[in-house]
Image 1 (cartoon, helix red, strand yellow):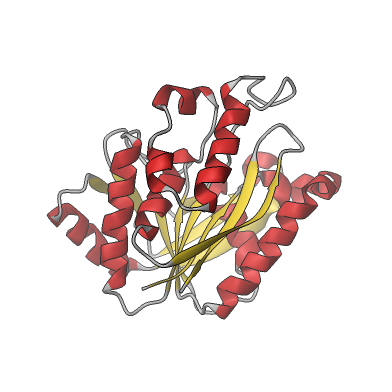
Image 2: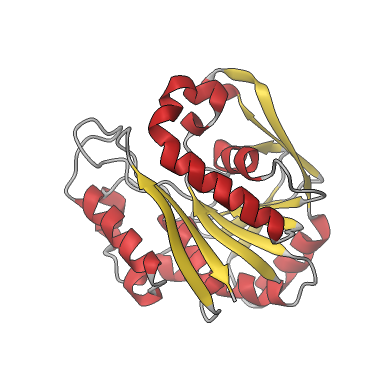
Length: 263
């Protein structure tokens, strides 16, 4: 069953070893992460299903990384010391992939112990006190938003029949094109995308999220739309209260942190 849901950013600057003094500009996001870490602990989550846009993926199929264990590092950002280790939820993933394929959902598997930073950052900040948890690493595809919503709905159907307590987390940064100093430069679509995502997620307006123009979404230079649409699909039909915990963009990338309280 799903017992916890959230959208979190995955900037490497959130890690002390990478962000250092720049973390001062991310105080709101770090405080939001602390709140989520506490809520996740209270939810007694046993499996963390995290959707990362930077995971190994396929253009025409959703995917999951099946491995007995995983290791996340920040070596790509100059930190060769920080690691996070996780056990794989092998049995749940096997049942899930069988059911998804039986329902005609385009879905495939990869296998690697290595986790990208879209997993590593949330795990570092959310699991300090969590005990005996396992990881279910998921990846979006290049298929349209509706396909990701459908994937999320099927994911909900699978998890609803599980006795394990599952947290579903979209690891997602918003626009990288908010102004001239953004990594992707300035764009008209960037600020509009962030504003629309915040507004539609605040009421979990699934149809409003689906109505976003695909070309405008890509022009916004985001990496979080598909993971968020998967999460939105997973929450569709559930009694959910969205709560925005933080939004900030001190380095020209939109960082949104939201929790979805489940009745």
